Length: 144
Image (cartoon, rainbow, N blue to C red; front, side, top):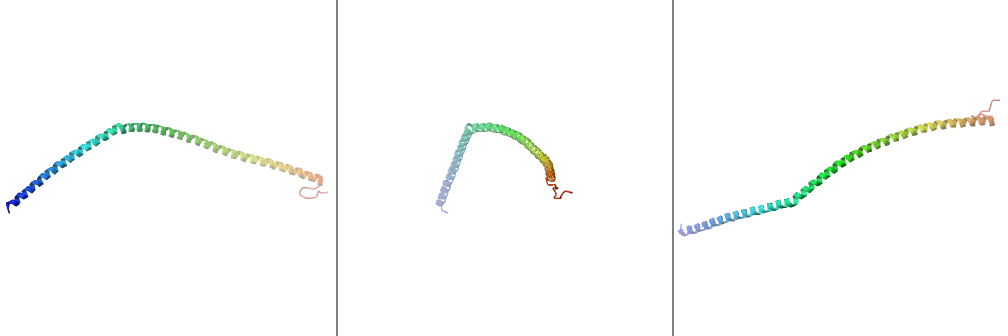
């Protein structure tokens, strides 16, 4: 092989090595730049979290404690209302049963009294028919 060809090859290999070193340095620089951006972004996130998010979280926690207290009160009131509703329902049910029982007794008593009155009126009618017409109410002629 001619010597000129090796010089050209060596020159090209040297250029490639230099470019590889420059690429490595460039990658290291990009890595450092990316790390700095990451650090700044994380610092900004922590700063926003401390200034904005932490106070909101504290306020939300206070509100949640109040809501929990209200829910406990609502559960207590609901339990009391349910108890009172059950008592009222029971009282209404008992009252309806008593009214039904009283109505049955009144109906029976009135029917008994009406039956007696009917019998009395029928007896009076029969007596009047017997006195005025001389016959019994059943249509028979009186015995002579």
